[in-house]
Each structure stands twice: as C-alpha cells, then as structure tokens.
Amino acid sequence: MATIQSSGTEEVHPDVLLVNQAREGDVQAFEKLVRQYDRQVFRIAQHITQNREDAEDVVQDAFLKAYEKLDQFQGNSKFYTWLVRITVNEALMRLRKRRTGRMVSIDEDVETDEGSMPRDLADWSPDPEALYGQSEMAEILRKTIQGLPPGFRVVFVLRDVEGLSTEETAESLGLSVPAVKSRLLRARLQLRERLSRYFRDRKKDGAK
Amino acid sequence: MTCSEFLAQLDDLIDDKVAAPLRSELEEHLRGCEHCVITLNTTRKTIEIYRTHELYELPNELRERLQSAILAKCRKC
Image (cartoon, rainbow over the protein chains, first blue to last red):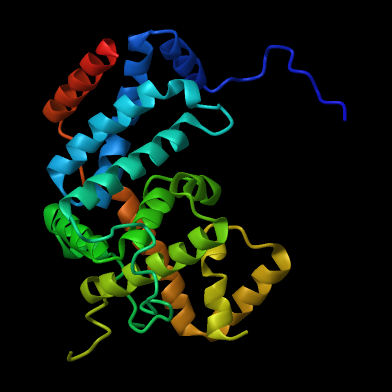
C-alpha cells in the first residue's frame, strides 16, 4: 500500500528530539525532560507508595533508569508513557521492599464488589468545595483515594488525574484495555461513593 | 434501559465517547431516573475535584535537589 511520504514538515514531538540528543550524550537535553515531567513522576510515585521518602527515591531511580535505557525507547509510544511505565515499576518495587513478605501488585484486591452499584444516592451540595478549606479538602481527597485498592487507585490516577488515554494507561501498566476500563469505572464509583459522605447536600437531608 | 445498563456506559458517557443512537437512549433513561442523574453528576464532580487539586506538590527546594542528584548520576553513566 502506498503511504504518503513525509515532506520533512511532519511534526516531530519535541520529546523525541530531546531523547535523540540525550542519547548522544547531551545531558542538558535530558535535563529538559526531567524538568518537564518530574512533578508528574513524583505524584504518581507518591500515589502508589504513599510514602514521601519512597516517592523521592522513585523519582531519582525512574529518571536514572530511563536515561540508562534510552536506547530501548522505540518511539512508537510517547516518551511520557514510557517514563510512566518505568515509574510504576519502580514504585511497585519500593512498595514491595517496604512490605516484605507481602505480595504487592496492581492486580491486588480487585475482587471486590464495592462501588459496582451506587448506594449513596443523595445529591451533593451544589458547591462541595465551598464546604471545606483548601488544606482540609486536600486531606479529604488524599484519605479517600488512599482507601482504594492499589490496582484501582493507579488506574484512576493515570487516566483521570494525569490525563493518559485508556490505551496509554493500559500500556503503562501492562494491562489490557478492558481491564483498565473495568477498573476505571469501579475506581470512579468507589471514590464518588466515599466522597458522598463529605459532600452530600445537607439541606436536602432534612433533619439528619 | 435499566440502571445497570446505564452504569455500564457511564465512563464512555463521561469521556464523551458514546455514539448518537446510544446517547439518546442514555438521555432517555436520565429523564426518568433521578438516581442515575445524581450518579452521573457526582461522578463527574469527583473526577473534576481530583483533577483540580494538587495532592502531592513537589516543593521547589526538593525539586532542585532531586534534579541535581539525577543529573549528577547521569553524568557519571
């Protein structure tokens, strides 16, 4: 089949240029990639390990590993997706070290029916964010998401917080697309259910 | 359409990936089911709240320290 040849004007993702430069030993090019993605890598690591020191170590290890393995980066996925995959693996490894003797994987605890059907059907306050101060709100959100099984939590974080597509999330986690979809639905519904305790519309609850 | 059938399409609806014929069936269900309206709206809000709140901020000082450590190790590679 004939393909349309690029006339040299086809846009190359800026990351690919940086990766190519870094491969040739340009550490400053790699530094740009670090600056571009360190916040995201830290967030993902923190969500998985739930430990600040571990997350710091994961940031260092993930970028270092990416640098060492740059030759293996194929360019048929985005650099960011590839980096996320490395980050997830490093974070899970940290988690295993900390919880010795206990298997930790993203397949853990997925056999739960919780959240598959909504139970709390009270409507929320029209502006739930007005109910709590900034730091209190962040604490509620952290506590709530930490209560999810790791396999649901990581799918929600990659897909809904970090904005990866379903396919990219599947690729990053080594899961099938249907597995990502089913976990995402459960994760969203479980979070919704748990947040309802804080955000339900008290006026409509009457005397409760 | 039952609530379970509606729920099975919830993610696609939220992510705006439902084709027209199915979309009108879902909208039809919503017109008669307050519970599913609440589920849809509060699930959307859940995602929005998590998207707009930074739960694990990387402070500048730590960021600088991590960046220097990473690059120092890369230079030794």
